[in-house]
Length: 223
Image (cartoon, rainbow, N blue to C red; front, side):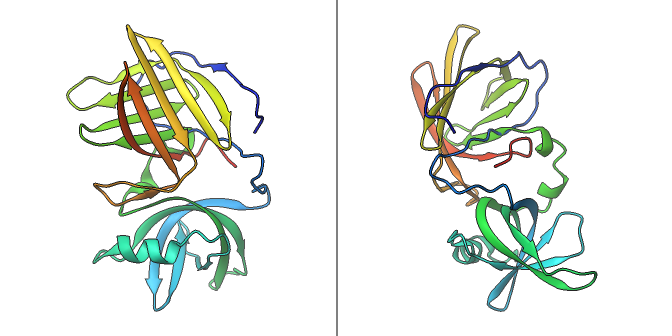
């Protein structure tokens, strides 16, 4: 990702949608040769098995990227057992009916969910961020951003993106007489209500009022 500023004006989004935003860090190794997948994560003995969405194959997870996925899954799974995971790694060793291995390099999301594989908006998302007290969610697509806040109607607006370096970026808009900013940084973030893990922290600022939360890239942005 370039250190210099890059501003991109995005068109107004007329409909309520969902989102995600992707960026590259200069010191970060390339993920070009790795595969990103979403699926179910299950603990079997002292190992984790990953089964991609709508795919019968299973992969033993080898945490080569130091993501601490074993510890994160153990603390989050509880009685439910299976978790939803969005991850990137090198998948190998699978023939029909056999078990392969994934050398995990990046963990985007880990959460308790039985329906995340069926999310119809995931592929067109750039970024999704959310927080609590009061509840808020920001969904970003190529058409614009949609801000949802507890007790208020969804607000669909255009935005400008500013790259800040070191994997950080900010999205901002001046619309409907409101100044809205979303600041995002690449650091592990745990939702204090659901317990879900996301790979970025977020800070929403609306007319100077600050709320913090977590964020994760969606399927339309790849790294």
